[in-house]
Image 1 (cartoon, rainbow, N blue to C red):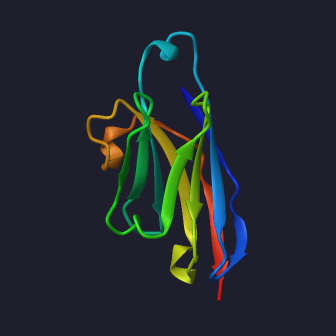
Image 2 (image 1 turned 120 degrees about the vertical axis):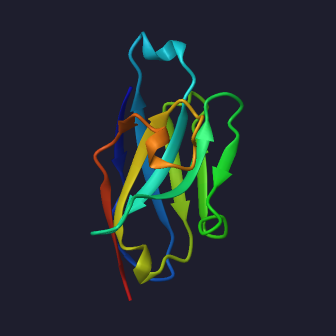
Image 3 (image 1 turned 90 degrees about the vertical axis):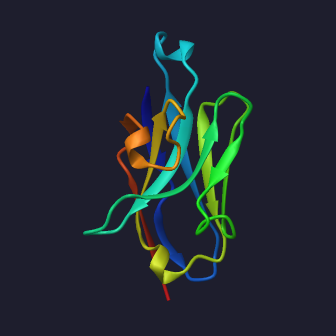
Length: 125
């Protein structure tokens, strides 16, 4: 499975932000069910889990720090997963990644084995 994140850029504090993750599945990988997660990573820090959504049933999981302002969703085909952030803050400035994994360790970066390239988000005050 391959992932491509997009939608980053410069936004003003207090505005909303929407990121997309396009998922390309090979014939072999279509036989598996995945969890698609969103993470972010600031320079010098560990990758931070935000939220995830499962192929099977669309169940979602949120980090406590993300549940108030972030929403994960997907299109009906499951080929694109979205991350919406409301009332963004300057501290949301960082690179955002989407990733795919089997869903066993959904809130940890180690639970994912395929990563997109990341998209930079910069929030101006």
